[in-house]
Image (cartoon, rainbow, N blue to C red; front, side, top):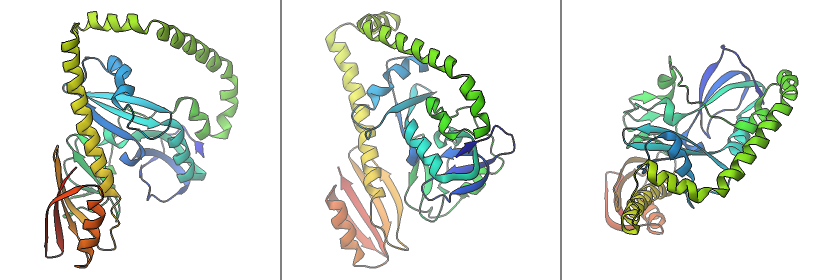
Length: 311
């Protein structure tokens, strides 16, 4: 795959069902299925300080990989996106081949922050806004108010580009290779300096902890710190529970003409309405969900299966 620094580009929304591109120059908006996103409260005020805590927010919840983090702030909460640079580079190489070129890459979360309607992506999935977080769900909109083509029409992209860093060379056009070769020494020097800074920061980790306590007037007693920790753990648990429920629903073996009509998520339960194509499918879907959730209540009427589930 190649890269082209040109203004003559087409905006494309990339998800797993997208068709590979062999010609043209593109600005690529990545679907939520290619990254992880959380909205959390943190005991810091600036994005820079929040970035130092980003890895701990996702601790033990991400698949194996080498993750980077990008952060924005919304009111008193931070939106943290985790993404694997190498994985995204591999995805781009699969979908943009031959003479196709990628100009820039963006996250859907930052490109459609005001989305307030269900947006149909294709025949199998939709883009929805759940508590300020953009999610891709495995269903079509019941009453389509918006399509991804309409959402992209006259779209002005944000400045929140995805930075692949040292992996950028994998998506750069051959004619720029000479310029990159000339800058190798500079890049190498930058990496050396960054490594030295990293070693220095590691050696003074405890000092930095005390500096943060003074700077942000954090409590010193173990009881107060434990209270903050408990609050963060509750937020983490809620976000993890939400992600696990959505993932379980996305794995439902729905057949043709079957789709999830609505999902209402609570802290301790969820209500899901599923359109099925035959009465016998009711028990098959219930059996599948009962392996992951406790079914509190079930109702089947007019080909609509309504289930109340407890985690």
